[in-house]
Amino acid sequence: MTSADDRIPQEWRDDLVEAIMIHAAFDGWTWAAMNRAGTELGLTQGFVRLVFPGGPLEAIDHMMRRLIA
Image (tube, rainbow, N blue to C red; front, side, top):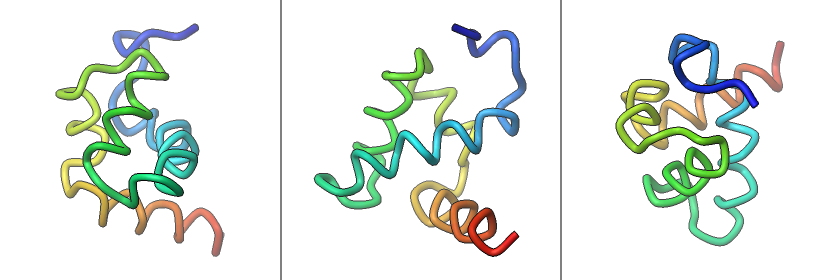
């Protein structure tokens, strides 16, 4: 698996948002869901906040932009 040290935060956005969607079904679009998803990907909570500094709303926005593109 690639570690957080191998990619900059922005390069984790797609992978993290996909992992968040699984947790959002149970936890909603929350920091808790984001942190659980990050843990599954081997990311720290601090790194998750670097990936989406705007929190869950920024993650939702990223997901929606991917769907439209």
